[in-house]
Every structure is written in structure tokens, then in C-alpha cells.
Image (cartoon, rainbow, N blue to C red; front, side, top):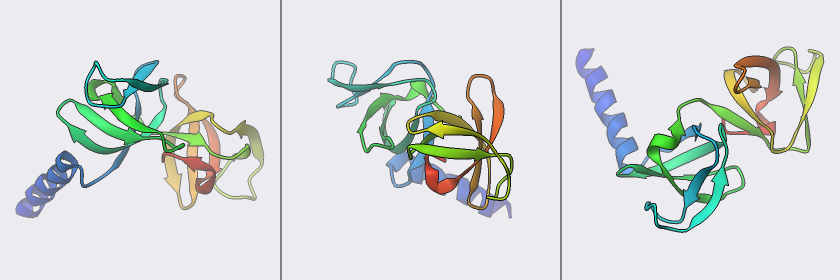
Length: 148
């Protein structure tokens, strides 16, 4: 059993280090530069705010290459990345419900581009809430967000 666990840890580390596996993360500081190359002197393609969800595709030294929900891509300095999972609303209006099904009442509506912290998942539903306040709002269908 211990050998299997060690093998799994080593294998996952190799996958991540070589860029074979992608993972979801978020931006850990406000107004982080996303650059064209893994270098502080390279062109800034865009800036991403605190909590902005990204998918990391590969790593090179202290930099990660990532993309966002709009298919923008670039390099971010790794210490500026957070492991807090967030999601962005991808439709014009989405209902947030009290529970993880359509029979639950709507507690609020949210708009395209809004970012929320992910607190959990159940089937095709994701529990989301406010990032800074660390407060749950409710449940949204998985197909209405990106980043979970």
C-alpha cells in the first residue's frame, strides 16, 4: 500500500512538473500581470484580479502558463497564484439556488463575468459564494460556470 501511495505521489508530481496535466487555480493578488513570456521584461498581455480563475497548463521554473475562460493565455509568476478554487459565470444571467436542484428556490441572480469562490460540488451543481467574505451564497448548475 505504501509503495502504491509513493508511486502515485511521484507520478502526479512528474505530470505536473512536465506540464502533462492541467489544473485549476486562481490569481492570488490584485492586478496580476499575465505576460507573453516567462520573464518580467516581456509584454503584459492583460491583468487579472484577485480570485480570477485560471487553468494552468504547464510550468517553467517559477512561472506557469495558463488560460482563462475567454481563451486568453499567458505566463504568470507562480508566487502570485492561489490554490483557492474559484469560478466565473459564463452566461448573461444565472440563478443561484438554495440547494443543488431546480426545485430549490432562487436566492439571487448573477451575471456573466462575475467571480465566486467554490465551496463544493454535488453532481452537476456547484456551491459558490463570496471570495473575500468566505460566505456561501448557494448552488449554481455546473454548465453555467467555468473554473470549478
